[in-house]
Every structure is written in C-alpha cells, then in structure tokens.
Amino acid sequence: MLRTYCLILPSGQYPFLCPLQVVIMSGPIAVVIVNWNGLQYLRACMPAVLAQDYPDFQVVAVDNGSSDGSAAWVESTFPQVLLIRNDTNEGFARATNQGIRATEEAYIALLNNDARPEPDWLAALVQAMESDERVGMVASQVRLAHRPDLLDSAGIEVDLLGMAWNRHFGRPVAQEPTEAVEVFGACGAAALYRRKMLAEVGLFDERYFAYYEDVELAWRAQRAGWRCLYTPAAQVLHLHSATGQQDSAFKAYHLNRNRVWTLIRHYPAHRFLVLWPLVLLLDTASWMGPLLRGRPDALRGHVDALREWRWAWQERCRHAHWSYSVPLAPPRFHADRMPRDHV
Image (cartoon, rainbow, N blue to C red; front, side):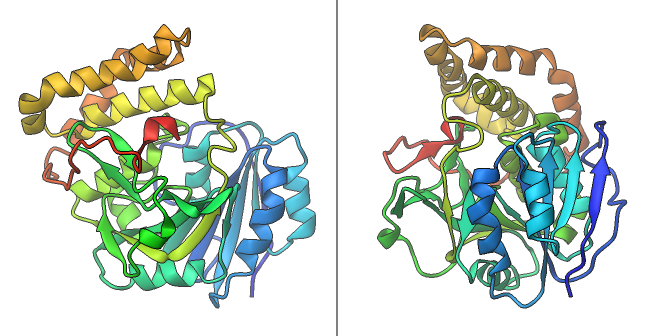
C-alpha cells in the first residue's frame, strides 16, 4: 500500500556523494519527478505515472520552490505521492538526489514533469534492467509529444570528440529496433537506475545544477564497468525543452559549463593526444557561434568552467583507477542526431 509523506527541506548544500540518509519507504521502484513551476505539465504527467500497470511502485515529487501552486495541487490531488518541498529552486541534480535519498527501493526511475509515459513504461524498464546484473541504467524510448512518430531520444551517446548527443533524435519511430540494445547512457527525462550502481559510483553531481548531469553520471558508470540498455518498449511522450526553454541564456550557460567540466573529468587522454585539434575546434565553436549572434552566455559558462577546473581535475584523479576505454561513437553530424548542447 502506498503511504503519504510531506517533507519540507530548507535550502543548503547536499554533497552528491553523501550517504543515503533518509529511509522512509519500501518497494521495488521509486519514481522521482522533479518540478519547478510545471503545474500545466503535471496535470498530464502525474495521472499517467499513477496509471502504470506495474504492481508495486512509489511516486516521489520534489518541488523546487514553485510559485504556480504545483506542490499544493499534487498534495491535494494525489495524497499517495511522497511530496518533498524545497524553499527555492535547488536545481535538477540536487532535487533528484533528494528524491533518491528519501527512498530505499532497488530501482529508481526518473521522469521529467513534461513527460507522459505509456502504461507499461515501468514494466518494460524493469524487464531490461533485470536482463543482466551489470546493467545499471536503462534508457526509455522518448518520443516528441508534438510528433509522436519521431524520436526525441533513444538514449545518450558520446562521440570521439567528447560531444554528447540525444541518440537518434528526429528519427522515425518505425525505424527503431524491437529489442533492447546497448547504449552509452540514459536520458534523465525518462530513465531507470539501479541503486547498487548509484551506491558505487555516486548520485548526480549537484554542482551541475541542471543539464549534462545525466551524461556525466553515465560516463562515470561506464568507466566503473556498468552497462546501459535502451529498450524501445518503454515509451514516453516528451515536450522538448519545455521547462528549460530551448534558447534560454540559463540553458546555454549551464550546458557549456557542465560539458567542459565533464570533458576534464572523463575524456580519455590518449584520445586527446590524437584528436586535440578537432576537440578544441568543436569546443570553440560551441561558444563562438552564439557569441557572434550577440549571446555571450555560452562563453560565460565556458570561462567559468575553466576558472573552476581544479575540482574537476581532482575528480578525474580520484577515479583514475577506473577504465577510460568506454564506447564512444564516431563524430558524425547527421540530421537524426541532436547534440545535448541544444536540448
């Protein structure tokens, strides 16, 4: 039976590698939904989540100081949902970690508030996860809400130049395989994680605040020897960049800052020795193009990442015993690929 709780947590620092300290529920799956002023999206998301045909799961909603009545609506409409309230916007990474720490389930599913899963979404994710004990992440088939026949994401891939992509973005769903396949990582908009994996490699890095945190976690997990599967049977409709807004200054800043941090932490040195001209050219283009259009936010993110490079390098050194031989995709720029810098 589902139980009801409401936590009110003050603003503050919650290091992403600290132990899971709050244990208040039991069951095989916890679904964590982070919300910030997304009442209009929650009206479609929450009923779809609670209508899952999986027999035993708990839903956790983490509200990041919304001012649109989101938290009150969830509390009054769905009393079976665990509601965690923050005073302010703590960011996607920290809020997600709060939801994970508030549970003890073996699997943690993440779902964006602007996503709407099919009834068998959870069941399909679990089936893929349980195919191998070294599978630590499962990616959903995320479709564009305005064009359900086209993909938003079939997992994450990172290419040889260190650029992360929404795998198969824009590809017709009809061209997708019917069986699960191995991929680099899972898009945090709709994913399943194994708690055992998170206990080993750590949770989302809260310094990222938002964007690229799923890429960094996937890279960390891959280096530690964990696998990720993409299962086309776990289907979700997603409103592309609804919360962050596609061309916002906030998004440009955090994507560029967090991408540089991730490269410092994980990009293999032996690849850089060979490909450094192309890596630096692509890195420069990521902020130069927006700057020439009068948008300096990508450059600010880039500069701030380099200004704070020491902690990222320390993280690299701390995990130097992990493998750097992770599967990186060829650097092909096709229409059916979407760089994470744009999503």
